[in-house]
Image (cartoon, rainbow, N blue to C red; front, side, top):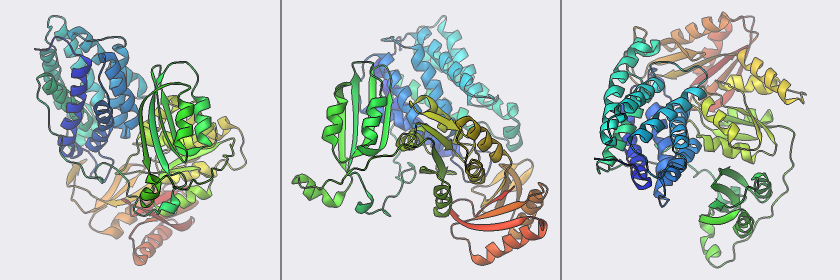
Amino acid sequence: MTEYISGELFKNMVINAAAAIENNKQEINDLNVFPVPDGDTGTNMSLTISAAETAMKNMTPGTLAHVAEVTASALLRGARGNSGVILSLLFRGFSRNLKEVDEADSKQFASALIAGVDSAYKAVMKPAEGTILTVSRLASGAAAKAAETEEDIEKVLEKALEIGYVALADTVYQNPVLKKAGVIDAGAKGYLYILEGMLKAMRGEMLEKAATSAAEAGKADFSQYSAEDIKFAYCTEFMIERKNKNKTNRLRDFLDVRGDSVVVVDDDEIIKVHVHTNDPGVVLTEALSYGALLSIKIENMREQHSEAVAAGDAPALPTEPVEMKDFGFVAVCAGGGIEAIFRDLGVDGVILGGQTMNPSTEDILEKITATPSNTVFVMPNNKNIIMAAEQCVKLTDKRVIVIPTRSIPQGVAAMLAIDGITDADEMTTLMTEASKRITTAQITTAARNSVFDGAKIKKGEHLALVNDALTASGSDFASVISIVAEALNNQNPEFITIYTGEGVDDAEVELVTEILTENAPEAEVLQIGGGQPVYRYIISAE
């Protein structure tokens, strides 16, 4: 029996929830509707809540309010994909409802669950039924009703899970996309796994978390970089117990000229800082003016200099002053050719990501903070990254403007639209309008067997999506490209651009170009080596 949830117990609940998601993430991934390689729901939810798990393991729990707040903050920074962002919002509302609560009884716990749902619904522009929102709403409502007469929180959570699973089964009928595919909602399933993990923690059943490889964890392979590429040697992270209300703008400015990869996240109680610098001592001295240091981690990023560091002889590199600009730009993309295009168009920060590797809110925030401008435009270039980017707006003193680009060509069009423009509002309008004029086709292969809209799709078949809608599939590549060409020609395009992916051969590129040219003879067809993974071809029509 559990009558109260303390900070210590909630810490264990979060750790258990992370294990529950990690151990079942492939099952959740397999519920994804499209058989397209994607930033899968299970993986995104696991990576998101793992950020909170890490925070839990590195802290000594105090009150429930404090532990819940640390959890919510970590989830927000680590949120990946739409499912991860919604999960972070559920915990954010939960945390705010428990502010100043040392321990929660059944009614307070149920009330906090409802507050979490309210927070998530308010943040989603067009909440759809038959999703994690629906299931969390009905589950929390069941918990609240049970808490009216039940003091045992375990039984309250049992009731929430009982109703939650009934609601989960109904998602296949509520959401038209799920109904066509004949599956339940993946995010909702993940949410119930989280509640199950929490319930087991209340009962003292701590789960073992399955081992995760670096690749699965979404970690980049830095083997391609040499030590000489590292301008600032020391990765410095610390947390400050906030003792005054001094704004953190000054701290950010101080760090910006003494390093890079600067991230400053703060609330009423703590300030969390990450920076790459050559003089961590100076940085820490400045940090003390804001309050006591709660934790410090300093790592030398040049392993080959470890002996010199130990001897105190590591050479320091000169810092260079940062020239501030009126506007800065951050874009998410993958592929050397595509990155080069964005750099040429004036993008300051490029985040490696897209399909299969949705960057977290903190990844995006890091690039925003490092951009030498107080106004930063962000182009997510993927529908599953837009929400994560939007969370950055409230996490920095800079003005962050998210242009909701859903593809690489939309991001390119947005950058091309603002040559010579110097007003932020006008730029926002022009970038948004330009991105909407682009039709994007993406060619890949099916990642799994699937049935969608009555059509059977086999793993390994060619797939074509036009503006994210599945348009063609089959084993005959030329036929799939022909269907795409017809769809693009219906837009009466003046320009068609083909971004070729990694590993495609010249003969196939010629075939694609020939089919597109024949179907749209009036259009100018351009071919660019994008080098992107996942999609063999990204094709834009304007």
